View 1 (tube, rainbow, N blue to C red):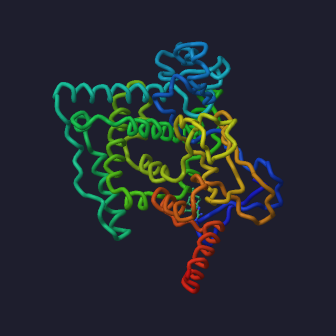
View 2: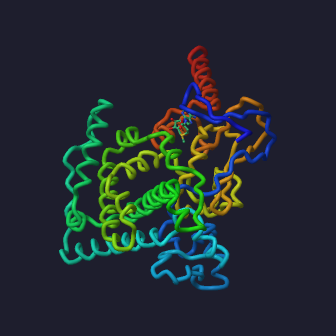
Length: 397
Ligand SMILES: C[S@@+](CC[C@H](N)C(=O)[O-])C[C@H]1O[C@@H](n2cnc3c(N)ncnc32)[C@H](O)[C@@H]1O
């Protein structure tokens, strides 16, 4: 962390600033692994669960009709490793040693799949749309405290919903299921991390990892709950559905997971904490991890899933960034694209920066809920205003 420090900016919360002059190509931050992540179900067989390696269909199509990694987890511990595939035996062997890739994760994963299948089955039998989970209070309030109280009350009500409520409701969409898987990775990790802190894992498992980033770090990320729900009030229903589903899946898995872990899914607090920080703080897991040098990607790189790299979420956005990120396996590396002087802010770009300033700002406002204050936007806006004024002063003849 010598190359940069975190400081308040005058325009957008905290940012990262160079502590010394840096030459182009300096790696300033490597996040060794995500805190939470999901690989989309449709890519699961094609993406190595350990190093996220993916091979494009068309490359493989020359050799095989169907692309899927062939190496599976060793099955000595029964259900261990459901829904994961590996590119090599080394990756398979490494997989069990870090984070939350565990029999508990596999049990939750299986419970998610089974609960979803039951919901689909119930819907099929009824032959009609299932009921929505009751939505007692809409998010319409403008007052900040009232909004928070309304949201809190909705989460609390959801904590007492029953398995039969979720079975009667609409099956989750694919996107909701991916969110459930993403959340489960965060909650399981939080549980293991806290066990680790208590020394229990260390006692039971000499191979247990020491976690790199902590839940308490996750809580320091910018909370975008209110901004997101104001822009998309219906999202609260989705979040609560996903939480209720996950809570029921954990209950269904209770014979296969420790009761302490099941209890982590009972209360809504942890799920709410992650969801409040999901929007605006997660990164796409792109196919072209190592080869991809430019985030203004105009090729056909696929987004294979998404991940939360906590330390990487303190970079503010600039439409003229001086930092880029490159995925190296599970790790995310941030590096300077040009010379940076001591004290200069280090910025990545959240969006494609080719468009004009008005379109860029519109995109950031609608998708990220902030009005971009980067130098380039301010300069381009000022020069447009000058031109406009000039036109008014000297109308064309
Ligand atoms: C991923 S976070 C970056 C870290 C954040 N500043 C913090 O304190 O946690 C993104 C948030 O930073 C702020 N931000 C980032 N880039 C900005 C910019 N160019 N102009 C204004 N605000 C910006 C916005 O509040 C945005 O929602």
